[in-house]
Amino acid sequence: MKQSNEKLLKWQKKDLGKNIAVYLINAVIILALFVGTIYFRAIRLNEQFNLKALEVVRFFALTCLLLVVMMLYFYFEERNFLKNPANSQMLFFIVELSIILCFLASTYISPYLRPLALPALLTLFLCNRRSAFLIQMLFCILQVIMDMYSYASFSILEFALPVMGITSGFIAVFTMDKVYSRFKLLILSPIISIPILVYVAMAYINGNMADVLTSIICALCSGPVAVVALTFILPFFEVGFKKVSCFKYAELTDHKSRLIKKMRKEAPGTFNHSVLVSNIAEACAAAIDEDALLARACAYYHDIGKLRRPEFFTENQQDGVNPHDDLTPELSTNIIKAHAQDGYNLAIKSRLPKEIAEACLEHHGTLPILYFYEKAKRFTDGEVDIKRYSYSCPKPSNKISAIIMIADGCEAAVRTLTDRSRENVKTLVRKIVNDRMKLGQFDNCEITIKELNIIINTVVNNLTGIYHDRIEYPKVSLDGVETSAVMELLDNEGEE
Image 1: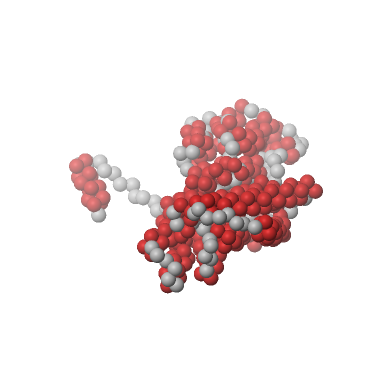
Image 2: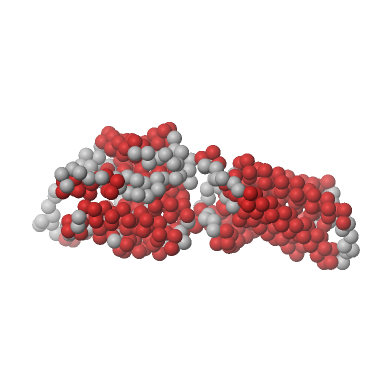
């Protein structure tokens, strides 16, 4: 989330009331966890539970203070995120679940096995990097306070815990950010354990550790445990709070996913076009520091509305049969226009992420369908309202939809060129972008001229790479050449 690139949503009194209620309820839940963990640890160790009421009040006051700071941060930095109370509740669940898991690990196995980086990892993949830092610090402060009351002998060494926890979480964020493979996450996970290993070494030097080997093993496993917990828990948060992580986007762009398989079978031309657009869109998004994986997923699905009538789109037509030859320009226009709304409806029905559904709806904006507009003008002596031959969908509301609009139009246009030299491609791409600017297609997405120039250069680089010049192969006849000799020659080339 980039607050500077978002239009701030209007707040109402009920929005503020709902958020305050969520924060107060979770302050009470965290207090209950505080009392509960101390009570159960005392029971397990056969010790007396002697937590005083004044200490409970102090902890609750400190928790409320921390949550006020958290709320102020989101109000000034991520206001649109805060407006939805479910987002705040999700973050509280992350903190509370992490506290429970750390309590279980420290009580039944070892305090060094605690997945201290779990809050940062969950917040990173469900929200963003900045929020991950904040939630990790909040969790570590709460965790060290609970440890102070849970352990009778809390030495000065234990005050290093928040430093180690914060360090571990920050390393996790910097290491795991933009890692889209669960296997790679697991491979990198031991790096997260480094601060915990340092913590163990400090305890050993201080003479406070009896079983060094066990503690080292547990500390080394703390990072992998956090990643394994992330892999298991993340899908539940995605479903429960309707969030989409990078792993979900990667799954959606798998060619074995249901809608992609259907597109490959029923609309192969549209599928091939979408693959090319996805490569261009991904490169453009990365070039202007937007979510490249989201752009790739949106590009894959931007034309799924064509699945309703695939034969009415040129890329899927075969044997020179064009159904539009038998239709009026107005009817043809209505069929072509419908694929944007059909794509949005199908995306919603298939429970695809909201961003993908928006890309389906917005990638043509209010652009005119010039082919049928010109055809209609020939039939009516030029008296035609261009609005009747234009898309009637919303204009791109974000930079990803704008990228899809540009990549979609440029790929289709460059394919029609006979001379695909870099100069010709660049001229065509720049014209397409300028035409869309003149028609006001980018008015709602706050994309800058600088970013558009970067996108133009990126699109040109990708398209010239796709449609590069090829050498003309000589026409060689193999008549009279023995088959065995040809096969022997091919085998020799293969061995080389």
